[in-house]
Length: 102
Image 1 (cartoon, helix red, strand yellow):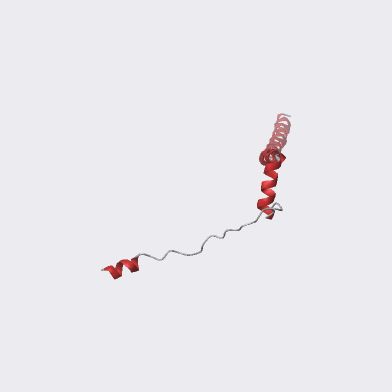
Image 2 (cartoon, helix red, strand yellow; image 1 turned 90 degrees about the vertical axis):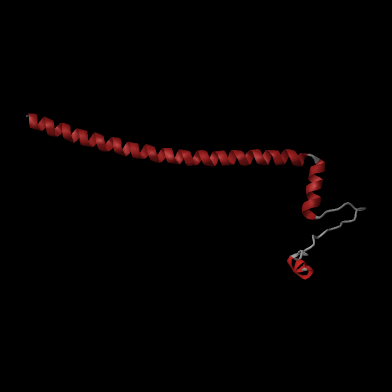
């Protein structure tokens, strides 16, 4: 009779161990998912703050006009638009000029 109790006890311990292991594995999975969701939430929160700042910036009519003029090359009717293109001239090396001086 004691052998049956020991076998039953071992079977119960094995089932409990398996159950605890699977619960721990499931908990770890949920923890990882929660961390990923928290990262996404933080990124979206930061994006929301950025968008709110942009909304506040564009609520000012002067800023809105400035951005429209910059992005779309808009101008007032009595205004001339001048586009300045930077020079692509690359300065020549001074090594050749020092060689001729020697």
